Length: 327
Image (cartoon, rainbow, N blue to C red):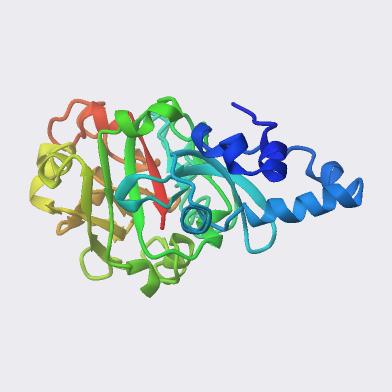
């Protein structure tokens, strides 16, 4: 990771001298307790620092003019300082990375690493699984978001209007995320304002409860999307050919039940009109029937891993992490 001691220069001499924006504004805030409590000068410097740390990337963009994609520090409503990636250029910028969903081993069904379903196995007496869609547990690192699951404080703390979703090849380096993404899109309807302002609140309203609803009847919202890279048709066709009659392209959908009444958390790029959502949606609860559906990417490998035949998704989308942003 690239650390900048130049935050001190920035705070003392200003942006024109230190030009923090030109290097992506990655601020080093280690040893904060010692640094800002040792004397009055450093305490004053800490107060100045707080003025340059926003609650979201949108705030950093609008109030301080930061315009480069990269890592920034944010401060939660409870005072927690954390680092995440800001997309400062797409559709006006100001997008905060809050989570990533990464399938580390699709052959392991609800095993270690399946944080967005269950890491405890496919257990009927553990139907809610890890509950990470609707709790305040955080994990992973922003820079490693394409190599492992990631969730930061902003997931539940930031109040936003819209989401942006990127599908980025596994293990892609952060500086190549945007260029290497196979799909990038965003919503522009302020749908989060009707659902509590973030996904944490949305999943309080639409809980991922096994047998908590039936397919088609009790699904959550499906929201129209605008593509920043890729298009509706090609995205729909990255899932298995047998799924084509079950989806409408050009949406992102939330809390979708399948035939067996298992809830899936997110269906990327599509609106669900069928009942076999385990083949094209990801995340959810902790119990699937049959067990071979269990996992973060569920049954994307039903007819073979990455074969793109029958119900199986393409290797390209199966081997890409899903990055989720707020604005």
